[in-house]
Image 1 (cartoon, helix red, strand yellow):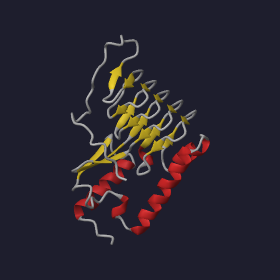
Image 2 (image 1 turned 90 degrees about the vertical axis):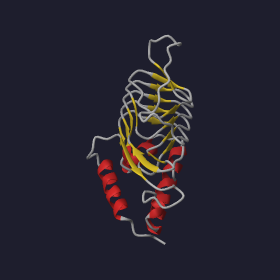
Image 3 (image 1 turned 60 degrees about the vertical axis):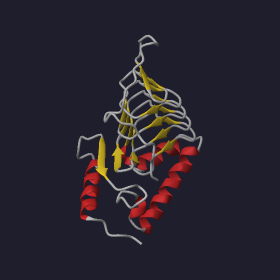
Image 4 (image 1 turned 120 degrees about the vertical axis):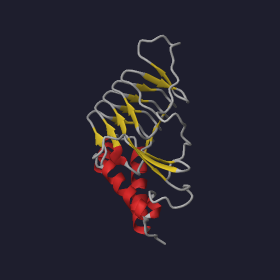
Length: 210
């Protein structure tokens, strides 16, 4: 049965709407919640049967199209769902893009996304909900099986290596490899690897709902 949102949830949803419309300069929206096993006010499943059905249809359609070998339908559907997609973008077969907030995704010109890469625009932590913009700058490359967390910007001409797990900004021209990610700047000796941490100094429990 659909429950009525609390005043706090109503206010938080309005802040999230403003964030999604680009009315704030924040890269990440955060709001404390109860445990994800209980209603949080942010999951589509907390907003009634019709919204749940509509979301499931949208998610299934996006998942199906992203599995196809043809690039054009993927770009057209993502644009219809609100994503900002530049020119000469290629998304490989079986990539996965978070259906919850595709409007928070920006992909600039000449970006390549490898097979089965994952791009998240939201996450549920044990006591917090987050939604974050993902910005893939001009000419960057996302390797196969890489994971890009919400609130992440990949700089112009940067490379995210295969199976890398990225939860922070990657500078222009740099290469990110591994899990946990290590940053290798272009032109630097291979030994000069950094071990960056997320901006809040903490990890990610890896959960994403749905």
